[in-house]
Amino acid sequence: MNILEVKNLNIRDVKTDNDIVHNGTFTLKEGSCLAIVGESGSGKSITCRSIMRLNKSWLQQSGDILFKGENLNLLSEKEMRKMRGKKLCMILQNGMSAFDPSCVIGVHLKETLVEHFGWSNKEIEEKMKNAMESVMLKNPIEIMNKHPHQLSGGMLQRIMIALALVLEPDIIIADEPTTALDTISQFEVVEQLIKLREKMGSSMIFVSHDLGVVKKIADNILVMKDGKIIERGNIQAIFSDAQHEYTKYLVSAKEELSNQFKKIWGGVNLLKVDSIDKFYKKGGMFSKERQQVLKNVSFECRNGECLGIIGESGSGKSTLGRLILGIEKPDQGTVLFEGKNVMDRRVRLGAISAVFQDYKSSINPFLRLKKPFRSR
Image (tube, rainbow, N blue to C red; front, side, top):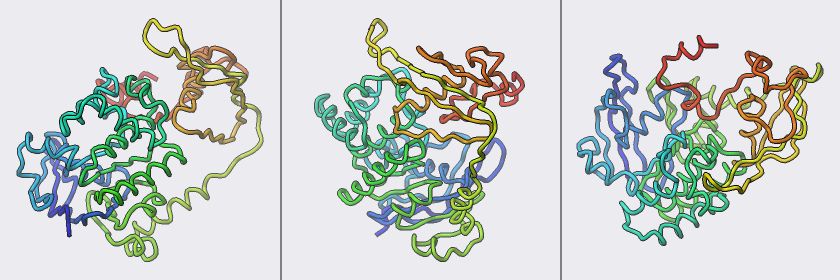
């Protein structure tokens, strides 16, 4: 039995008069997982948001979206709000944009769960504590009393997944839910999503670039390109006998990319991190308690060498990156680029750059793109 039927979905940008999604038609069976794969800009996320009716006002959608026979496109906004969360739950790709930055995490969680279940604060705290521990979040009570900016992107992503575990919706729409997670956490999260399906019979739409994860969790696949569904089928058929050339490319892309990355040895030391310690204040504004994030970290990176830094969320990877960029100052130790301290702006300007985890917060939203680039 189909729990969701999408028929002739079209999405048009009225500002530019461009069609973004063309005649999208697919079904989701009860208790099954449908993966949507494709390159960035292919229409995956916007298709998912159209099901939730969360697209921007200038994106007009037409067609039928039937949830248990009820056309979601015909519901009022008030009726749709009752659907979101308990019936249809979406795990967003960008954890930072999913939470109100002015409130601690617990406030957001309580508002959502009180709205749908009317639980007491004690019930909410207990259920969220269990769910957060199940997705490998340590000290959940402490986390619920922190603001979003005090947590890593991976931790915020797992909080959204924990909330979905508590809501137990009919359909979970997971838009790149493991992108910001380390390998171990990816495995744990995928296992939790699989267990949720088995326990509650929830259906799932899973958007991902990681075909390894898709192969593990999905029953069927849609392949999208340029806003069109170019191929569909069950997981075995797509991976073993893809028909479209683009699908064949996606299946082989991961292996091809791995083969292109070769370690280049030799050359002089370009970057030297020497005995770095870093502390952050723990607690409120007037608290004197400090938490050590980095302890005696040392390494070197030679010219032409690619050094990988891995670890679970909260292990200090991003903090280390900010120290190398000179955005933050170490409490102990030094970071040297070509023998000079990176805290000197003249040393790092034009020599060290970064591709940030959260692309939306890395560029000023009030400026056109050419402005920040021109300021360099």
